[in-house]
Image (cartoon, rainbow, N blue to C red; front, side):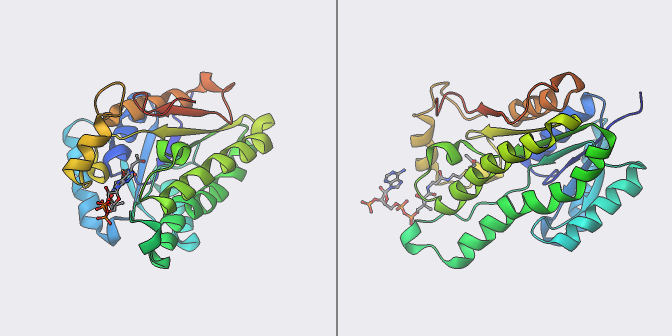
Length: 249
Ligand code: CAA
């Protein structure tokens, strides 16, 4: 069987790197989508680091907030891999935390664009080829803060909650054609995004996590790889919470 192709948006970031590696370990041909503010050298350096560790992972530039840029990203993936995307991991995301009473439109708009509009731009480009092939996996990275809300994240919680509606609606539309759509909802995973939270706030969050620690990136990567598997075809429209027990429902 030919190697399936996986595209991970935000692939060179904290969670993204781990997701790329887990998918490569599972036998996928993996491409990391990156934005990095257009810093192509940074992405190449990331690629080199992966190579040193034995991972051959492609890199494709794309701004997930921009439809044209996403189309170019998909063209790059196709030219790098010689095929169309079988597994799309919509992982790219940003935070612009602040209390709502002080939140600017820009803080709202940037977060909604990067975390939710991105679902439309990227998935719209890959869904028809998946339906034609009769196989596809769309895995959307949401957050525990979509489910429980979070002080200081009205924008992020709204965008990440939107992902759940998107997942469940699309899952119904494509289920009969071998395409599954699922959500993974990480809790606080130790990446640069979480590291920039004030240390005192980090400590108070840790004290509320039943497992007693922040998560590790590979704990998300392995969940994604499980959902991407050929044998996971009966799981669709589902959400996988990986949050150390921080929120149970
Ligand atoms: N619940 C209730 N009250 C809170 C609170 C909380 N969780 N956090 C802070 N407050 C209170 C403070 O005690 C303070 O009260 P007083 O004015 O009475 O002293 C008041 O709210 C203002 O708090 P700050 O001084 O912290 O306000 P700020 O404007 O400096 O910062 C903030 C606000 C940026 C939102 C900051 O509180 C913060 O960074 N919070 C963490 C937000 C967070 O968890 N982000 C997650 C990022 S990681 C991620 O998003 C990944 C993922 O998917 C999980």
